[in-house]
Every structure is written in structure tokens, then in C-alpha cells.
Length: 249
Image 1 (cartoon, rainbow, N blue to C red):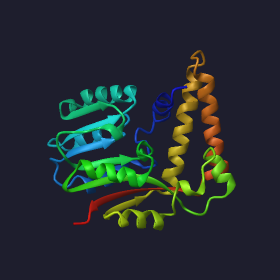
Image 2 (cartoon, rainbow, N blue to C red):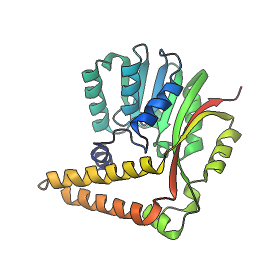
Image 3 (tube, one colour):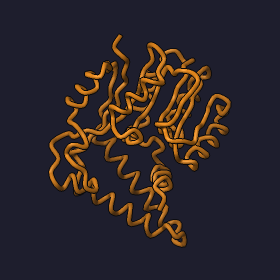
């Protein structure tokens, strides 16, 4: 089953592809969009949930989204048309790491998509290339709330302890690269749990509603395996932080 299709289905009821509540997303956007006329770039935008919310709130804002999922970009464009913001949104079907633009951006987002650049620090290096002077980066990344045991690693499908840092180490690595956190949000356990229940539940629900689809059996198994890996593995050990960063002058 196509990975992008799985993601679209799993995020049916949680369009922000990260463990963040609507209230947390709104707070982060209020802190990140300071004037209302910014030029915004989302690297790994999926269905454009972050950009659509920002565009709907700020009539002077313009945005670009980049993703490899053509289906997600189609949904983003359709949603933008319904909201009346499509003329202010550019969508680009290509790997985020290969995107180039003729202008810099006031705000660059990459929340829950740092895998597109093979990690947090390469993501920040890519964001820096797109950033206008005085601009900000909003990045979301996982971390270990406590040292993972083998059940945790198995629940992630064979992850290693080195795949994530603890939060102090993560912040130290970011600041060592010349970035200054000006705001941050650690997802609560409620947000983390709601995201997992929504992810697994949406995928399982689709499989139940489409029993004749050739992908239904695989979708149901993927939902069940993911739920088991979470409940018996990384629940309570894996955390997620979203940082608003500026470059040190």
C-alpha cells in the first residue's frame, strides 16, 4: 500500500500531521506570524493544513507548499479553492530537499517532516537557505521523554536509541548551530494519545468502510500493528516538541 495513501487516510480526522491540538496550532501560528503579510514556505506540507490555516487568518499572507504526495497537494488545492485562498498559495510537487525559489521566506515550516532531510539539523540547514533576514523557522521533532527500552524501540519498528535525543540535548544541538528558540511547545500526553488514536482509528475505519478495496486488508493490519507498537511500546517514552527559531545575528 502506497505510503502517501496511508498517511492521507490516517490523517482524515487529524489534518495536522503531528501530535498538536487545534489550540496549540493556533498558538504556534500566532507566535510565528508576526505581521500578517509574511511569505511562508512549508517543506513537506502534505495536504497544506498549516498553510491553509495561516492563509485563512491573514489576508495579506502568501505561501508555498512542497511535497512528494500528489494526492495530498490535490486535496490542498481543493481546500484552498473552498476557502478562497488559492490565488495566494503555490503548490510544488517535488522532494522538499530539491525545492528552490526565486525569493526568500519570512517563515519556513517543517513540522513532523524532518525525515525528508534525514534529520533535524539537515532540515534546519535547508530552512536557512530559504530564510529571509530576520525570518523564523517553525520545526517539529520527536524526542525521548525517558531512555527507551527494547519494547519502545520494537514499537517503532526497530528504531535505535540514537534516532532521537532527549529534549535538553535536542535543544543544545539546535542552539549550537546558531539558532535561538523564541518559543516552544511540548506536546502533552493528551495530544500525543489523541494523535495516535486518530491515526490508527482513521485508517481502521477506512478499511471497515471499504472492504472491497484491494488495500483494505493491508490498511487494517497497518492500523493494528501501529496501535500495538504504540500501546505496548513507545507510549509515555516518545515526545514531540515544536520550536520557533530565529538565527543568532
